[in-house]
Length: 241
Ligand code: SF4
Image (cartoon, rainbow, N blue to C red; front, side, top):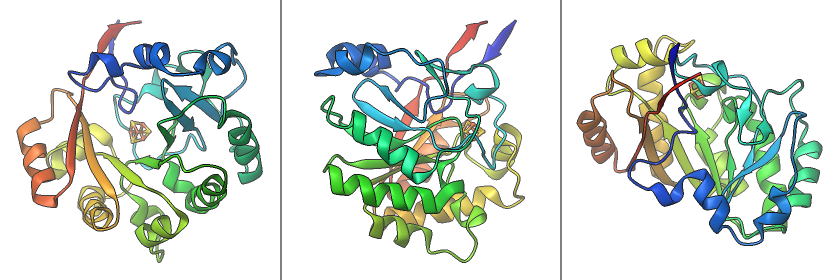
C-alpha cells in the first residue's frame, strides 16, 4: 500500500548532503556514538550532526502524514516512548552523549510536540547550557500559546537559553491546515502565526513545510516573508511499506 511520509524527518529539499545518512558519514567522532544500537525507547538520539531529544509522544495536531503513525522510529532508534522522561533522565543521558561528537545543534525533536512539556524544555535547556555552548533549537508545531495558557512562552524560552525556533506549518491557510494537520484547537492556524510573529522578535526563526500536495508553496514563502522569518522546504517522500 502506498502511504505518506515523514514530516519533521523529511529530507531538506535540494540538499542531498544534509540527508541523515550523509551527515552521519561526515560527522566527526560520531562512530563511537553510532556504534550503539537501541531497541528500547530512545529519549536522546542523533541524526548526523544533530543531537536530538525525544521528550514526549503527545501532540495537539494529528497530521495525516505524521511519521509516528507508520514507523516506530528512525534509523536504529525507537522513538515510541512508554513513559515520558524526567528532566533528570534527559540531562543524565545528554551528559553521556554531549562530548562524544561535535554536535552542530541540540534539537528538541521527537515523536511529539516538545512544547506540550514547556517546563521540561526550560529546565533541560538551562542545564544543557551549563554543559555546552552548542546552539539549542526547538522544532515545534507552534501551538504553544494554546497548550500553555497564561504563559509568556517566547520570553521564557529566550531566558532559558534557546537559540533557534523551527515551526512546522505545512499549510498556507486555515482550511488547508485543518485538513492536513487536524489540530485539537479550532483557532490553531491563527495562533501558530501569532507564535511565529512573537518568536521572530527573539530568535533565529524559520517556517518549514513538507511538499504535501495540499500545500501552495509560494503562498507559504510569501507568508514567511511577511512574517520576517526564513523558509525551508522539506521534501515529501512517498514510499512503499
Ligand atoms: S505536528 Fe504533531 S502530528 Fe503533526 S507531524 Fe508533528 S508530531 Fe506529528
